[in-house]
Length: 147
Image (tube, rainbow, N blue to C red):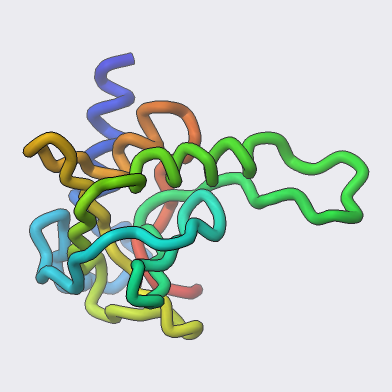
């Protein structure tokens, strides 16, 4: 269990090598350039939120279940729980966003980043906390790459 969690945290921060089919990319990890700091505003889903200034953020390196659609008869479980978990992690914290990929934003203009929530003097890696609590899984890709 501990090894799986360590692997998930390492992958969440972008510490893995490229596969044979991928071209090598610039290394970005949890220590990338600081893109923004501020308080969280609204949480849109389990991996997307807005800062208080309105900029939208998409968390890199994780996947979460989608939110249920109003017309769905049997929605995928976990989307609402993931959104609520993200809201709890961000609530009242000072958020620091670190660059996850060479491309800072996705095609919708959302910053793609690793998020750190500073609470009680300690920084918490938001993606790692979501993975550790079972609300997210490590994504096959960390940022904006589209096959």
